[in-house]
Length: 554
Image 1 (cartoon, rainbow, N blue to C red):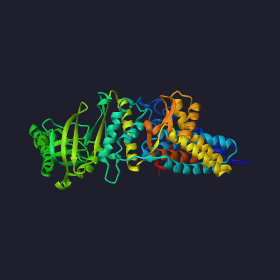
Image 2 (cartoon, one colour):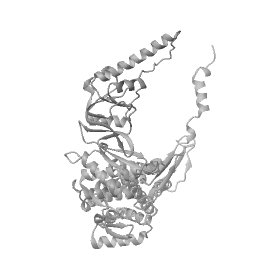
Image 3 (cartoon, rainbow, N blue to C red):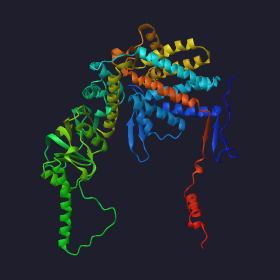
Image 4 (cartoon, rainbow, N blue to C red):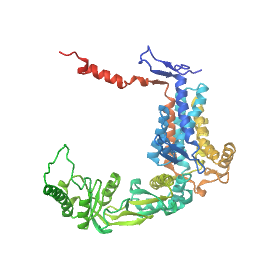
């Protein structure tokens, strides 16, 4: 019988040992069970959100702000989790989101189930390193099998791309308008796609608008700035615009030192104000001299400068977000100017049209026909802030997965079909491996079935019956069958339009496995006492000792 190092050791204070007083040490199986329990708890927290019938979570922070969502990464980021192993599971979701854009809930649920299966094997005296070895072998085999069961996605196959977008948005409050939004997403990705079959997610800007209904969501060719022009006297539209991007305020700077101005008569007040206006006029004159007829300023433009710009016929906006400035720089080819001293015509960019328009019932500025075209915007509308935010998260996921499918050109069936196919094939693989790793490989195969089980549970179906039906369907009809939660029967997921990019599924399994293996390899937890950090009183005493307060007067 194999035994964990330090097996059965309790949580003990390490006073008198090599650790500081108050440090707690947990070893062997106790440490492992604590970490596994924390990982499973994170998975359990978001398990009910999976699938088209997943439930939402209401997250209330310490100041009372409310977030209502079933988006896995949003839930995990809003949760205030302290346990280090639980934080590792959250890192899984973050990596999944950054690499694939979707599948965060799937990755965490599989990771939690891998830990649960490993816990059962450990209770049967299988060593964690053997389990980790078997999991890694199964992970590599899963990648091979996913490549075999995947199918091609052509960039011009808009129907399949729409299905991929709809699958990502399903269950996220977008069901009523997911067809409309998926059309916008596919169209937007097609507009920003490059010749080599690549596309940048950052080229698609998603703007939200509270008001109206979700049906008012639309796509706009160009960059949308959610602001109005500064002054009604400024032109509403500028064609063949010379664009200036400023990262410095068009107003007088405050002095860095305190100063007083002594004024003894009214004429001095008038002279002081006149000098201020002359200095601001000089700044505006530099803008005019550069040849710019559109100014986007990241900082402030005061009232006098605003009027002078309007007199010069210059279209101006102020206090733009840094992300908008960077996007405008890429699109127009303009340099972001940080000082008027270096301003010249060489810093200007070009846009075919800059226009203030009414979009979704609100006036916004659209910059289009740029020097470097290929930037589009999607306006997401909704009746409340919570609705709009959830739609925005759904559209963001849709954009990411369509870009992934567009670049990789491969997809796999959703609805638990891929997991059932993987589970079946990995079990066959494990039987050929033999030895102790076979137990871990079979546990890995069993863990993957948590996805169809969860989909069935969240739809109010019996998970065991559905899993048996799915296994039968895969044995008879092929690998494309997954759960239809409305009909309660297995159906061909490709024909039903429930498909996901290959990258999403591959990354989810890889991330889940890596997190589970990392947690399984921890055999000791050493937690320093929080009281180790000196408090305010101790810091004050240390200051007295180290300073003049602790020294005798001479």
